[in-house]
Length: 336
Image (cartoon, rainbow, N blue to C red):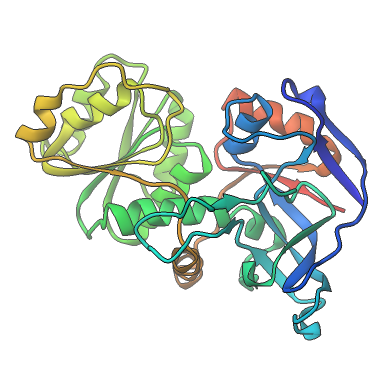
């Protein structure tokens, strides 16, 4: 089969499109013929060596959709040919509140979906929603699950609450926006791009502010009629951590799922205790939340936003675009 293999840590030139052996399913496993795979920032961070437990060579990719190609022992052979969506996460564990020490995501340490074929547990395949094509389905799993846990499970947002989603443009932030809008919340965004703010408004956001403007917090506060925010959904960290807490209402909730801006060097702790702020960390989601997320998107007929589609052989170009951060929505790899 053809696959894109990360041969060593570094630039995009280390992503090699090549022939590799077909995977063989073990007991309770299936091999899925991938029709589309989607990129995540995780893939870029692994390539750059900014992730834990990196090993090379490795086939990256967590998201994928396709058809069942082969099944292992104890798996129903009638699954062959079925259109499926892959849950990229395994070994969450028995505690819904937090993942186990054995938790892992497809694409590291196991070979992922940037390939014509991928091997996964039979428990990790689900029927592809009929209203989505393969590119849209591939763009759904990881981002939808992460956003659903952040917005629904952790923040538990309510209708008419004011929600701020930072750094709109990435897959998780956009999925969080779509979930919050479908919940009838009042959604606002930040970005470094006015164009991205306008695109967010076309998806249902009320407004937004450029965080490159030193008065962005005042602008957002005014957009809420000076009421502030009930919830902040943040994937940036860094200085945004303290800034977001400043514009939260008393008893507000701050949910963080990433740290693209790195360490929060200054935190006004008094704001947290005096305003009775609740802080929630979150990452990915449990198998239960994966199903709930997919069902939520399907019930509300929400389609993932796709920025661009590349052929699998163009993975280097796709990585360059994601690393530049210019996309609005998911970057998808078309396979085969």
